[in-house]
Amino acid sequence: MEERPLDPAPTIGVPRVAERAVPVPRWQQAVREVRHRLESGLPVLLITPSVIAVLIFVYGFIGWTVYISMTRWNDVLPDYTFVGLRNYIGLFQTPRFQADIRNVVVFTALFLLGAIVVGFFAALLLDQRVKGETFFRSVFLFPMAISFIVTGIAWQWLFNPQTGINLLLKYAGYSGPLPRWFTDPTIMFGVKVGAIQVGIPVALIPVVIAATWQLSGFTMAMYLAGLRGIPEELREAARVDGASEWQIYRHVILPLLRPVTLSALIVLGHISLKIFDLTVAMTGSGPGFATDMPAYFMFETTFRGNHFAQGAAIATLMLLLVAALIIPYLRYSLSRETEL
Amino acid sequence: MKVGRAWIYMALLVLTVFYLLPVYVLLLTGLKSFAEADLTRMWNWPTQPSLAAFAKAWEKLSPNFMNSVYLVIPATLISSFIGSINGYVLARWRFRGSEILFPAILFGMFIPYQSILIPLVRFLQSIGLYGSIPGLILVHVVYGIPITSLIFRNYYASIPGELVEAAKIDGASLLGIYRWVMLPLSQPGFAVVAIWQFTQIWNDFLFAVTVTNKPAQQPITVALQNLAGSQIIEWNVQMAGALLAALPTLLVYVFLGRFFLRGLLAGALKG
Image (cartoon, rainbow over the protein chains, first blue to last red):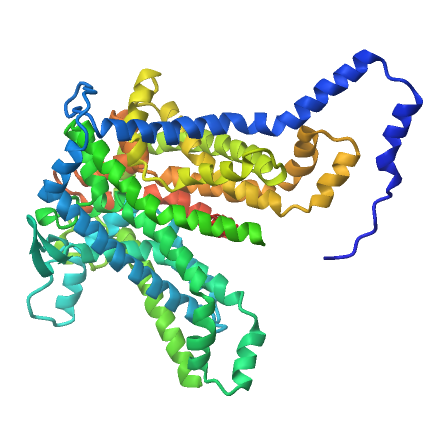
């Protein structure tokens, strides 16, 4: 704490002294009382409109959606007949939804891996006192400013099997069978479960690359901030103890960056579970629903197919998935905040 | 060690190529004529670079581009202002329930919006704002409350308490403190929040595609997606259109990048 001159204390007491000296008329006391009440109630008053909005638009609407998901409203006109979990049971029996669950899990796992690895690697490079750091940092981060739709259009062009990267492969003299990218219906390591093959859909890989391109700048920025926050003395001390640069990274830096990794996983993870725009722009449902996602299924079944109850059931399951990730994180980060 | 440095720069160069490649391809194709923008000559330079594709893309997309402008400006201003008031209250005042209120508001920025879409559309239809830009403004203002309140709360929490105490002693009321102490110090906070909201709202697709149904009312992201799905694919026009759609947020990023980064990191709850 910096030292600052003490405020001249007497000013606090002055008005009270004056109050006592001259008797205040009763009506003025009443006015003061009302004003005081207003003042203490004002913070609550100021934030009330927002609280009401959040209560209605977030919690109220979620409740409404959950309710819709348990009705028979699978046509244009609302039908609020209660049917329990029938829509959910129906969903889990639908091959498309089974594929969606596989896709969103595989996509999230691969994308998180890609974003963490690329972002960490970029941050490590930038932490080596390189020339032009600001330039490189800006280049790695700019995709964050672009919409998923634009990203999808650009990468769709690049992964178009008839051109783009395949054309470069041909130029490079590659003569084997060219990858079919997002038109490939193959499921790698596929094991038949229910109506679908559980494994890694090949068509998802271009989508993972595009998403990594768009969001790895975020992990880069977080890791770089984390690296910069590690005091030089720590590395110095390890060096004095005879640790190699590699050992310093392995045993000093990496453990200290664990909270950064956790934050990045949660923030990118919840984006990934909700992924919608990117697949819409890039691949749609893909061959045999190989790149279909719950968010896209929800959109199509609700707003194109008018199966509102089924759409609400997908939405509710998505919410549960995201809540399982976010609620522990909110508790963790807010409890740490109050400790500080 | 010399060799090591060279490897570092090599790796940085590879990454730079990876990040710039899509933009290069958009630009390259956008500068071509319809005849030249075909699959077999994708990587070739245009023989006669021209802006014709950009002009055509603008002709097709400009009404939607303007829709996005009319959407993003009021929505950004209103939600920044609301966020500032909420952030001030949440940072400076403790009242009964305030420690539960904050995470309850924050939760709203993580939810999949699919879980509120059906009621939202019904609600907008019932108040007559469905399918309109004002309807979208309302949506973005409401669902912007969590993130704008969070950024402002963290920002105001960093303003020294002594300033507020001094103003209180001078007899300033709650609103007086906000008006004369907090607001004048708020510019960096407003910059971070406004840039964040601008980028989010400009780039939004989910709300845009569900809340607006008529092409004349649709924001740029939806129009661009529809352009890509049309019958004959004019690759040059599509790529030029994608660049036009990305331009406003790219400009903001280039000129105000440091505020952008702060908003980004605030989204990770770190402030």
